[in-house]
Each structure stands twice: as structure tokens, then as C-alpha cells.
Image 1 (cartoon, one colour):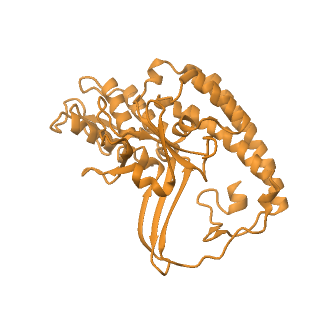
Image 2 (tube, helix red, strand yellow):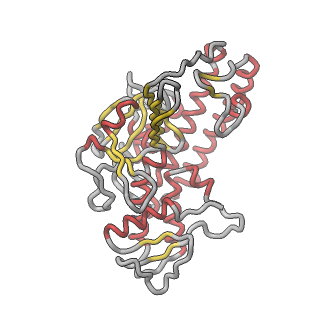
Image 3 (spheres, helix red, strand yellow):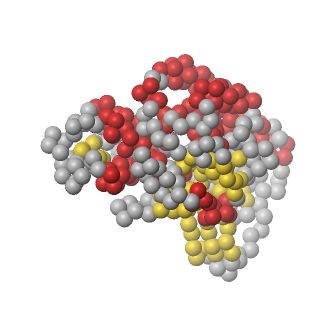
Length: 358
């Protein structure tokens, strides 16, 4: 649908400074409306199939896969707290369900960005909680998650009827906020259902064919912060420009960056639960990979190999970085050790470098 109207399905090229390059025509609207109805039926089928054939088989082991306890960040509509993907305010929820709300422009007052010398990624944390940053499994501090599970946790309800019914069922089973990492998959399908319903709602609004789709843009000095929800999580773009409209400063926190600390913690949890005495089993490999992929649909698409081989290899080292006998190191690899700080460092490498693409 995006390709038909916006030129490309990924990174559409019809978006221009000041708006959109062309208005939607009547025939385009009719065609897209038909496509959206088809997508809605597929979303309903996919969710029903998953509940019957996949989610019903989630045993205690899967429900505890990479399980950690965190806060959540997502966008809601300011007037009623319902799920929003754009045009809303950010809600940062604590473990007990209490929350702070703020605009995208205020993000630096509520979110800090921690750095580690062993990683090029930033590790956002909840600055407003006043507890600092820690990825220790037994003493996490400032940790929150984004993406679909976070969005349906922070939202009070969903405005579209089919998705709202699914949300009520989900909460009756898992409470609010739901913490199990594997539930990202269930939440993703609920959100897919909502997206299809919302697209149909938008296409049935005559205003969508309004001819005014672009405004003149005059370069000037200033700062602009944009915030939307993307499939990978909350997306924050922060730009400053000079009088010619040229960017002088930029800061981005993208969806997976928000989740860097939780991903590392989930990998650490799975590794500690399944790797015993330096022995890395096939089950351990599979479960570690499952923990990473639950967070990010893009990672799932980027981690296949043409030869069908394993996408990750795991080696176990001791606290001094010495390889444990019987666990040969192969590159690229995920290195997991048995100590505090070193273990956190190794878990981080799994998310950043241990899952190579084909």
C-alpha cells in the first residue's frame, strides 16, 4: 500500500519538507481502502491462528524466557490516554503502573543517555526516576522498554473495537503492565489489528483527499524535535539548524536504542538460566536468539543465512575473559562470562555484534 501511494514500501520518497509531494486522488483512495480491508482480514486470521496454534503452546519456560522486570515508554493520546502512534504525548510507566507524561521536546528532562566504553550504542534510561542506570539483573535501575508491548502497556485503551477487545483479553491473562519478553509477539499482532482498523478509518474520512498537502518552508535557525512510534519502538529526532536551515546539531534515539539495555539483560538472563558448566547446547542457542528477536521485528529479517546455518555462536569465558575448555571461540560470537560487569559487557555484545546478517 505504501509503495502504491508513496513510491516505496520502505523509506517512502514522497515525503518532502513542508508535507507530502502529492495529494491522494479518489481512485487511489478507493483502491487503498480495498487493500486495507484485505489486510484487516489477514490480521484477524493471523491473530486467531497465533492464539490457537502458537500462543496456546507457551509453557512456563517460554513465558520466563529472558524475563526481566522494567518500566515502559510509549505514546498515548493526551485527551484520554488511548494508544497513539503519532501526534500524542509520551508516557513513561514505572513497574507499579504510575507514570510521567511529557512532550517529545521535553525528552531530555525525563530520559538520560548512558554510555559504556565497550559499545558504540547509547543506553537510554529513565532519568526522572532519580535512581541512575544499572543493568544488573538483581538490581536494575532506570530500565524501561519500548516497542509494541510497551505501547499496549502504557495505553489505557485502544480506540478501535477489534483491537480493544483483544487488549482486554490480553490483560485478563497477563495483567498490566505485562512483563514477559515473549509477549512482544502477541502484542505485535494486537497492534497490527489496530493499524489495519485505523487505516480504514482514515481512508473513510473524506478529508484524506484534501488538496492542501504541503506548505512553504523558509529556512531559519531553531530547534525541532519530532517523535512518533515506529515498529521498533519510540522514535525521537532532535535537530538544531542555523539561519540557512543547515543542521548544526542532531541527536536521535531510535526504537532499538531504547531497548539496548533490556535486550542485554534478557540475553544475560537466558544465558544464566541455560548455560551450565560452560556447556552451550542447541537449546541455549535457540533461546538466546529468541530473546533478542522478540524485541525487534527488523532483527528477525536481518539474521538469516543463505546456507541455512546458525546465525549466532556462543562461547563461554570466565571472569578474566579466559575461554572455558570445551567451548571453542568462533567469530562472530556471543561471549558470556560468569561475573558481574564482564557478564553485562558480554551480553551487550550479543545484541550489537553477535547476531550477524547474511
